Length: 483
Image (cartoon, rainbow, N blue to C red):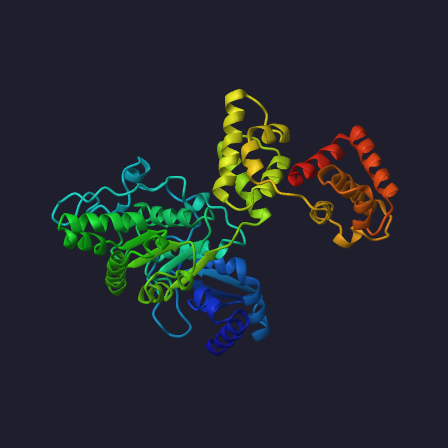
């Protein structure tokens, strides 16, 4: 059995690659074979769920190829049991039941108390000498793992953040460096980690079995506190305070570029915490290697752990974010409005959420239903900032995507209604949204005559007057494209 397991692991490692294997699969432990079921154990609930979602089918196929008796693979969280390699069982964990929802964060943080240094029961209010800590920044109660919408652009960063929240200072994840553009979720994930680690109901933040003490601050605040400590001749107290925490979290590290003395203090604090087995979490707008202006020794240390980027959002992720936010607000938002906003506001999730907030506030204050018309009216300034000149090529591409046809169909000779009607809509929109002449538009659609374009415009206008659903479809496309 041990030899079969070694071969399964080897094949899996060669398929997924060294980095992915080390991150998610190396900690799998084989419990044994019971009838036709193989049981495999993972150290945490999160890792078990991740492997179950992403690798279970492949694991099952590899085992079935190795041992014909195997029909199923069961994944468990670490607990009791006997290992096939003869090693003693791992220490029992909390129960293995999935929770329907995470428990609420600590009451002191929920009430809005300062929480950049959120300690466990033994010292939340001051240091070892009973002196009060400097007032820190508060965590945002909206930024939890539960409220973070996961999609392709951010799923790896989310998974890394969850791993750190469950197992701080674990090998390969210290430091955790999150980077990405403005409004993509870096700060949200950092707050979520802090909430998870300081939640007394979880009770596993540190090796001591108590909630972790977490110091969270922006790089700018780190610098100002360091300057204040120099001015008040209390640098030793500043050093001791930060180096006594279980987790140090610094947001927007790029702010330290050009601040040599502050960089040096951060470097020494970083080293002291890592050497003591404490967790570091850092965010920036660029990867460590691209942060020119940081000292080489700082960039090198930041890149030695887990580096995870958050990519620009996709259309599908923006739709999911809007739907989740509208659901939490309890306000019905039509799917057409969500699609319109997701197409128009593409660069920044904060701006996207801000636009929806304005719509919801307007609907609540004036008792008006949210529609495409009210959306354009209420958000005219935001939408104007995102306006751009529309080209015929862009119209063709957007219409083809909307009607699920090939882009080449726009200029092909096909006359099937499923192709001809979208082509007519694209011609209509080209006439409405561009300054091109009818002959120019016709040439863009497979060198068609200008009379063909005239017929398409007239036909679409007629259908819009008769068919409300069709008119709404065309209007949605126009609003998404118009400049």
